[in-house]
Length: 331
Length: 261
Image (tube, rainbow over all chains, first blue to last red; front, side):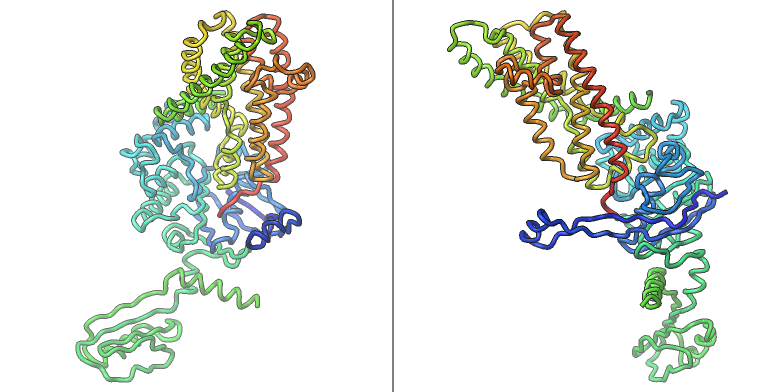
């Protein structure tokens, strides 16, 4: 079943431009200069039921604008969208019963009240029975490990604790689709990992489809099966995360350390020497050009190895490469 | 309807998050009324009669007590809407399955309850001490009804200003102008009866007097005929403004650009 289908979606904003300083401000009063910003420039993609899709891209790429059009709170300038069979901006309220949303940078929980009050309020807003609300809160509290936090005023929670409550709140009505806009923003590594785990678990247990935006490649790696990379309002790459890795992660870096000083020459065909020290060396190579065991065997011939590290370039570097490739292709 | 009741209740609880703050804010009425008492005493002392424009000093001060209570407990959410447009949190308010305007209505009604009760108690206590017992108790329920419809008119006008934020973002100038209109044409500073006839006519034709002057005047001179006329006017304004607000909301939504990220 298709959960989201959008085709050629566009959104342009008109913003007032103002030159710097007092003079600029005065001029903009009398002769406002308007600029049309194309935030989303013809995006087409689909999301199947139960999928976890990541929309990734740098700040200002048009990720959030796309999510907001999918929830129906922004009207697109052009294009079509169907979310769970609804046209979001025409049937926003009907759609709202079936989707959950989390905007990582804004709170939806009532700030001064304990989270449980907001949970109960949301239950009422989604027209659930009292008993069902209670059961659901119990279930979510356990799944998100927030039993002990529910009765603390939200303002006293840490960001990580609050985010877990925020996401739990957005699932109170068992939505079929969860839209997460930068759910891990500002969190530390441990909190990020916890959030990713719970999102993945809810997807596996309840079958909720997940669309998330992020500019953190870690979210993608840990959470998504498929990825769409957007930049300047356009899709620049889309594929399965595993393909992305296979395609772009064929380069390896090998570092070795020897028991004694090695004056030797490390030059090999198809291998880049990244760093040479007195006791060690770091090499980079592409496994499609030279197998890793060949490289390692040659390094072992040079002396007694004390330590070996083999690493992949990070997904961040991969994505940076893709941006660069696209920009070069456009230029 | 149940969801709006839940929203109302949640906001009532929310408004009690800082009990001392709400106490002190409600006590602000004491300062205003204390000053008013001295001003109006001088005005009445310097005239040769005890009734000015159909009101005694006792009437005038109880009138001002109620008018001040309405002013101080009246929700000022235009800036809240503007703020949520500016910082983007409006996104959450719009993606839940309720009517945005009824949501605002429920939240602001919930916010009014305790401020209204406390301000009324503090204000009454002071004026009772200054000029004696309050007006006839049988007029109170009528006043409460008139107050509720006046509250709705204020809600619609404030919502219109707030929705302007969908287009212009900054609405403080409009709220400022609205407040001055309520002060003067709504009869908050001076009961409208003291105005020259032409200004009285203008004031009574505009919605501002239905928020403040109408209920406050009914409070000091309860009378069924006055109540009926007032209610008819209030209903007409609620109908007109209600339509305007929902049209403005629908139009505004199309133009809304949400800031941030």
